[in-house]
Length: 506
Image (cartoon, rainbow, N blue to C red; front, side, top):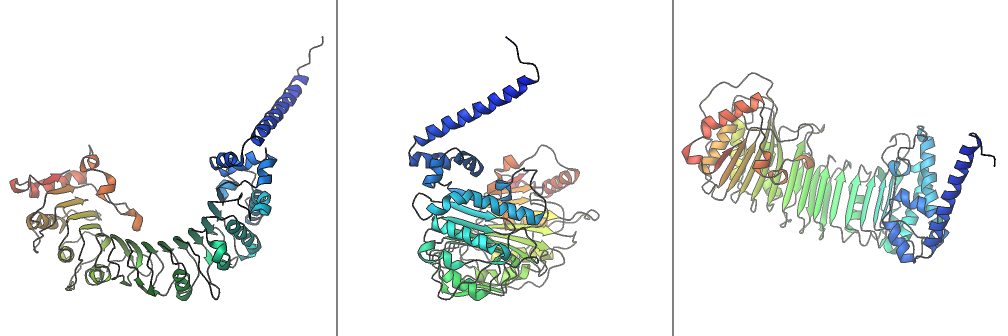
């Protein structure tokens, strides 16, 4: 028998391999046809979107039944991945993105009104605009018809001046069509509620990033969503954010870099408030359940705000009198003097976290007066964290006599934790003030290592001891030369018999 030559063997091997793959696919398809619809849905839910698309090719039954992956997340990564053949031309890539989304949804168009096609998450994240509104409208029609619970429409990525913004057809998300929608994330779109807008009935979470709308439209939207619990506004240009009617179920509110002129809400059940923006008037005095508030103040040009100290002392106790836990970012950029004092206090404040950025080596401790005033405004304070970042570019601080800063007694303060401790004027004075005036103090930790995140701050960057672990975990075996110097400075002034039972110097 003649044996095949070396040129014929690879051809036959490739043919055999191809035939073998077809047989495997056919066998898998036959076995899939034997499974019930519920089992097929469960298999789909355990796959990634890309895997589910590939598997659907094996079974006409899946396409006939309209079985759909529960998480339809269409992004550049999920549709293109590391596909090197994808065009780098924006117009071509946009067309290809639309084609690929349609290819996934096309088998489901005809069954999207039946109970077999249900979606948990439907997300479009790609640089699109009003020129593609026909396609986006069809996708929104599909996600509402398929009873999607969590909808995301993030159109960031395009040049904002090339294409007009897409106006979201909120009417398609309201009434019976949007009764299943529980969370909505929008970015780089325009919102204009239509006349007689009836709201998104069961919406609980709303996140808006760089969304064009006016204060009246925002108020209309919020008041028509009676079940709203969480609201995030990022980079949304608003002249004011004032709503006189109650948002009864709102629990979480975040406002970041919106340059809003005023915030005034009646949110009796609000528990968490995050503010990362310019100094503005804030009125949340009806939020008696506010458990945590975080503030990062910026100037009008979104730089660090160096004049927020007096605002904190005079405005915040009136704005949020019931807060339990307060996190503040302070910038000490020049000599701070003439602090104002008011009779209002933080009624329930028991935890205070200060991330202090000292942007120059100052030779006086005037800012300490403001800090003592702030502590005085929290008569029930139990826990204090001071996390300090100093600019040490200038010469060393001259030797001085360290004395405790003057101030009132604290009868509830039990713990204090200072990181970034150094010999700059005022820091040791504050520590001695706490050690001498906190009558029930149980523990103080002094750490020369800077724990604050360096760079442009925002509400998510706050350093907290509770999140970082215990002080033993924070200790490190080696120190820089400056940290060793600051450690010895702390020991020189704090290593006293009267403090040894409560003080730990790392």
